[in-house]
Every structure is written in C-alpha cells, then in structure tokens.
Figure 1 (cartoon, rainbow, N blue to C red):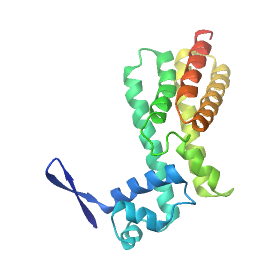
Figure 2 (figure 1 turned 45 degrees about the vertical axis):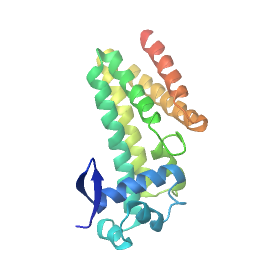
Figure 3 (figure 1 turned 45 degrees about the horizontal axis):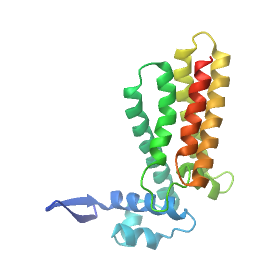
Figure 4 (figure 1 turned 180 degrees about the horizontal axis):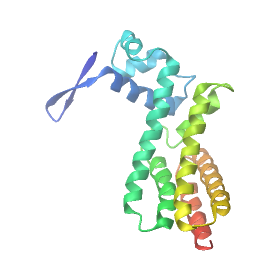
Length: 201
C-alpha cells in the first residue's frame, strides 16, 4: 500500500495514501465543489502520485461516494456524542439539531457552506447514484427523529411521523440558510423553534 510520511511531535507516522486522498478530497470538495476539483488537485494536496488514487479508487465517482460516506459518518460521530449527554427523549431529539450545529462550527477554509451532502447532490445529474446515497442519509436522519419522538409520544404513530417530517424540514431549511450566511446561527434558531414545538406536544 502507498504511504506518505507525516511528522507529529517529532515522531514519524505513516499515513496510508487512501486516508490522505480522502482527507484531501473532503477538503477540496467542500471548499470548491466536486466539479471544480480535478484529480490533480486532490493528488497534489494529498502528496501522492496520481497512480495512487487509481490504486485506491476506481474512478472519481467512487471517490465522491467515499467522501459522502465519510461526511455522514463524521456527522454521526457528532450526533452520538451529543446523544450520550441527552437526559431524556426531548434531549435526544434536540441532539440531532446540536450535531448539525457542531458540524456547522467546524473550521472550514471558506467558512460554512451548508450541508456537504446536499452541495454534492446539487452538482450531480438526476438518477446519479450519489444523489440516491444523499437521499438515504437524509432519510436516516429523519428516522432518528422518528425513533426519539416515538419515545416522547408513545401510541401516536401518525403524529410522530408528521412531527419528524416537520422537524426534518425545519432542520434542513435552516442548514441551507446557514450555508448562505456562513455560520451556525440559523441552525441554532431552528433548535430553539424545535424545542418550543416539543414543549407543546
């Protein structure tokens, strides 16, 4: 496997080329977009030969798929950390919003540009597998809301699904606005609105 040497605190650590490529792709795809990011740009930033990319990914499309998976897993990690601190079902619903806030507050090269998954989906043509992947991930987030709302509203399945959809739309709409404004304030406000709605259930 291709490796690159990285020095950390005087120690030499070997980072696999695949990991370096994914890190570089994630950085450039989010900052510049998928279409505007060429293979040479990714390999240059990763510090690996172009051959290394094709040894690890069959195509740029496969690299994009890996980026989408990594971006979603990154968010899931933030969500799980928030979930551990939640005190009750209401807190578990709001943990979804908190994880979106956390993701928005990462240090991005050009500031927060909205949901990385939706940004990619917007560049892909209808019917592209990448768009289907993004849709599944968004459905996964809504399913988490359903799961926590079922605990909050036992025996009310119809209201649970309507409320989950409502919260999902609130969350995604706020994320789009936050991306336009370059910060997390809209998502924070969406959390306030969600907390108020949950109090009235």
